[in-house]
Structure formats: C-alpha cells, structure tokens
Image 1 (cartoon, rainbow, N blue to C red):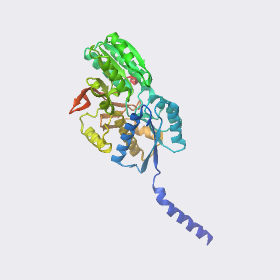
Image 2: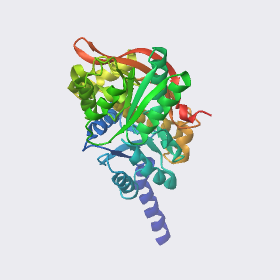
Image 3: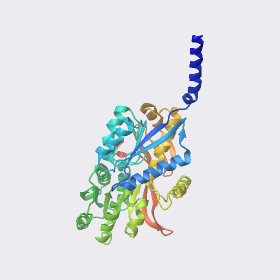
Image 4: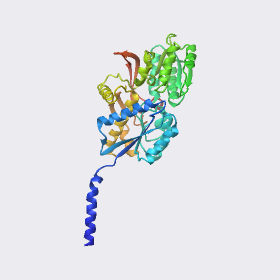
Length: 390
C-alpha cells in the first residue's frame, strides 16, 4: 500500500512539473553599454536598435524567452566594463554578453568571454584586434581599418596627394591612422604629419591650426561619435581650413545622424567613409528608418543603432540554428559565415575572423529636403578588415 502511495505521489509530482519541464528557461542577454558620460549617445543608439529588433520580432526564439539585462559602464573606464560583465555572468546568470561601446572595455572583458566560453557580441568597439582576444567574440559594427583604407583609396583617386592625419589617441584611432597611411602611401600619397588628440574634452583649435600651417590637400580624421564631432567641425570652420583649400575626410563617426543637427552647416561638404547612412536607399533601410522613427520620435538612427539591431538579428538566427543552445562553441559554429541583408546592405560574418564583411560607402554631407544627410555616392563592396587579410 505504501509502495503504491509512493508511486502515486511520484506520478503526481511529475505531472505537476511536466509543463515547466517543457518550457525552456529564459535566456538572459547581458548588455554592457555607456548610458551616461560623454559617450551616452552611443549606448542610447545601441539600446534603441536592440529594443527595436525585439519589438519587431518578438521576445521568444527557439523556445527561449530573451531577457535583456542592461548595465551602464559609462564608456570611459574599462575596469567598470569588466566588473559589470562579471556581475552579469555571476549574479544575473547571463548566457550571452553584448554591447561594448568602446575598445578598452571590450579588451578588458574578452578574457571573461574566453574563460567562460560565453558568446560576446561587440556592437560598436572598433579596434581591429578585438576579435582576436577571444574565440567567442563576434562583431556587428566595424573594424576601423574597413573604413580608413577605402577613404585613402578615394582620396588618391580624387587627386588629393598630401594628407595630414589626426586621430583620437586610443585603439581605434591608432588603427584608423595606420590603415589610412598604409593604403595611401602604397598608392603614392604623402603623409604631411600626424596628430593624436585626447579622448576626452579636447580643444581642437590648436591642433587644426597646426594642420593648416602644414598646408596639406586634406585632413583625414577619426574621432569617436558624440560631442567631439561638434568641437572638431566648429574648429575646422573657425580656422577656415576649407578656405585654405584643405578638405576634411573622415570615418563616419564624425557625422553620425544623431549629431548632424547639432553640427549644423559646419558639417556641409565633409567626406566620410562608413557602413551606414540613414539616407541609404534600400527597402530594408526604408523599413528600418520608418520603424525607428515610430518607436523613437524625434531621434535619428545612426550606425550604432543598426549594429545593435543586427547584433540581435545575429543572436536570434544563431539560436534558431542551435535549437536554443546559447553555449559559446555552438553559437560560434552557427554564426560563422552567416549572411543576411541588413538595413546597411548585404553583410556576412567572416568565418575565419568572426568580423563583419560589409560595403563601405563614400558619403558627402548635404542638405536633402532641408535635412542634413550623409549622401552616399560611391561604394566599395564586401570590404573585409584589411588588417586581418591572410
């Protein structure tokens, strides 16, 4: 009798537990992003892209309910980035890490991803070598050499023979400078000089005066997207480098759509190389921009929003392939070689480097129907990170 009772109780407990057993556990995605400080706009755009993708595609994929957990690392201190990533992994149970606005924070977190075999989706940080720091890192934004080398090619093809290089003094800036110089000098171009500007609160006026005195044909610059765009373009205008015949060439960080209105007419005529423009003419981008404007009235999407959006697309599509398994080895196997049509255009994850392969567009800031836009006029297709070519 007792034995029958035990069997009956066991059967009852199993019946009660069965519905729960059939439901996969929540999948926590830990997002480490700068939501305060000088790079807050980067984090805000990234989160806008992440949330928009989930709004349009639902919060469940392959039987897993995606639960974003967001931590603000302020962007300026890699120790904070690493600490927040540890908290996400240990205390919050995150199975995937994502975000990473700046390179130092991505570098600091990479050993955690490697040790725990956790997928780490980099949605902005742009130093070339980031993806070499862990076997479980994949990037959906850009490696700066992808933008810098095509800009050098365009400059040479358009009779700009002598260029002064000015970049922010940290990893992506160093990458941009090295790649531009390598490509430009290989074509026969001359580097008139090189300056590295502070990452925080720089006064650009004396730097630009020094460049003006060197009398190059153009400046090539990289600065992180955000308030520095206003300061650099204002100093360029006030020192009248354009009047001296010195053109301004840059990666697209200097004229991101969320900053263009604040930059104003100081941005007109700037030539940039980058992977996304709000004005990109494709059905996918028109749909993305319309959905973004509806979700975030009064805010313009920039490239970081698209990188966040595509980062979530990559996570969802990988989980479909793995059947909901978010372990690092399974996710990386699913991600390598993945292709899709993004709002930016066709993209692919390089199976060898886990970096994104994408078009680079040469753009010029113009007014279109009264709105400042990065107007694309030339395309370099399927650009890989030139620093990782075999």
